Length: 408
Ligand code: MG
Image 1 (cartoon, rainbow, N blue to C red):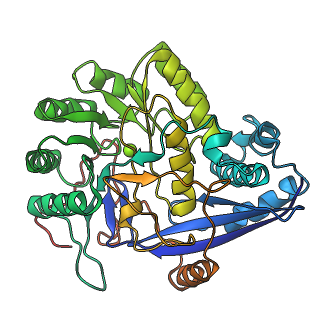
Image 2 (image 1 turned 60 degrees about the vertical axis):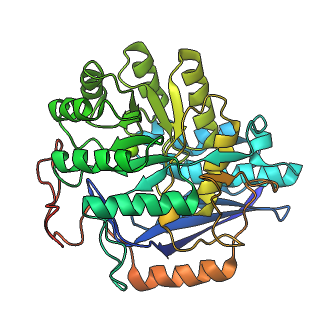
């Protein structure tokens, strides 16, 4: 089988409300590039990539010359063809490789009549447990609804999501407001949802000392882990030496070099695997094997996803023996999707792993057209800027917090 075409389509799908984070904001929408890899047998595989609010269409167009004629079964050859570690010093294609790997696994699964989970060792579970991913949010610009700024708004938002989707684990995206305010917010969440588990993630915005101070203030809560409180393996190691809460990361262990460094000189307890950051589903599985050997915890990270990438996370979640925690997804913040049948559904905080061959999801071409038009209308957005605070950018560690009293 040979690849004969590669198509990339950038879409914009609206969010319920703009999501705030330590580096800026998702400006009320996700921009994603949908990839279709077509073979000489007529099988089409699907991939998806983010890109910080920008289109990746041109990057995929540049890959076409490398991929035409390639056999989609040759996944290791694919890695060295487009993502050789020394050539990549000039042109990092890790996330492009990931999107192509998704599509090739989708093709292989369709060809063999089995799902990606079956292809990767067989499913250990038929559904995957998710955390509620709680963000501070600006109100929806059209409706004025959806703001999450005050502690009361955050608690209500969490309780609404808990009732609607069945989440029993809650993640607070922090690093927006002063740390003491976020401690108060996190403690209020924990008090409102007794028996549930919690995690807080300021995207490394705090100093080492600030991180230790926050850790001490939340140690009595039922924490899954403290996620990327500070920047760098050495910073994380200093925090870890000063708290009983396990530390997790999706930022400082995102490749095998860093994983090896963390095994040799531990800084992080739980590795949050991202099917895009690691270059595909298979590298995540390899990394999970290393974690199993060294008894590190594993969960699945969300870098913002539509249904194709969500399917990769579900298939990964289905086959990981050592997945110790509920996984993250931004998915519930989306108002729609580009996959046939509409958004996947949560039940009791879980989503079923697709059963069909390959990734088990297909495109709804009418939705693809609709959201491609929306992208053309609105364009990209700077993920690492805040639409309501012109000229602002954060330091690391940060000190330029937003003011929770200010309705922006
Ligand atoms: Mg994180």
